[in-house]
Image 1 (cartoon, protein in one colour):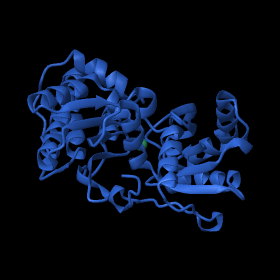
Image 2 (tube, protein in one colour):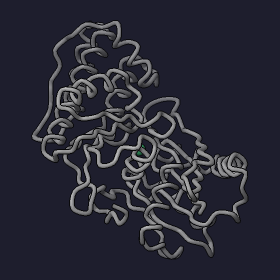
Image 3 (cartoon, protein in one colour):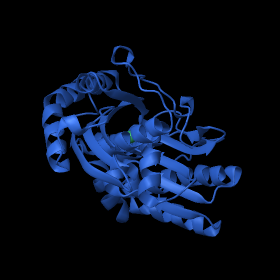
Length: 326
Ligand code: FE2
């Protein structure tokens, strides 16, 4: 069976093609990412980007996979959560491609978990999903992926990007933040964990205030890194303790941070759990995770959606999905 997945919830327009017979193979995973010249993500600009690149991304994916569109057995699309203008591009493209064929709706957050499980071979993890748009601590319990903790405001990746952008005037991103943090020393910043939830926007504000009062950028990057990652590690550890699970899966764009991997690694080691880090190519938003999760759901009895009733769900929560395959 060959499944084609479409991702378009935010910055990324991606098409992935997955083949599952005796073994599972990712035949293609092509993406084109919108990067705003100034400011944060602009939904209309992102939508225009996706419209512009979608046909090319599809062609490249089919070429890479060495298949024709007619060879695809199942189409899956990322139906939410995300930005409505962006979601609509993926939905309409999916409807067009899947005309007269099989189509399934896929939850973006759950797709991150499923590709992580596939790639790292972990079985029943607590997942820390950290990206520009999402920050969630998730674990499977009684039929659903439950959210044990999450951000109450902005996602960790957004917090880092916003701080760097406001301080430097440029969209330099997480890599620059990591490099600066290596040179810094600690300055106190607010540590905001409320029960199992986290909050990052006050930390960004406090760091920017200190920057404008003359504190060094590298010191603030280091302090923000240490503070925010310690918060994530604390909540994740409590989810492991609460669920009794022995595996931790780290995924999402921020999973690339070596310091976050190190902190979680130490925590896992201390409690006899194992850390699995989703490989970079599949940790960020992409089409392969949608193709794979759609196939998994379909093969385990999830119903296809009639083209006329296919839709997107801006705030589709992780725990609203009935996980038929576990
Ligand atoms: Fe994502």
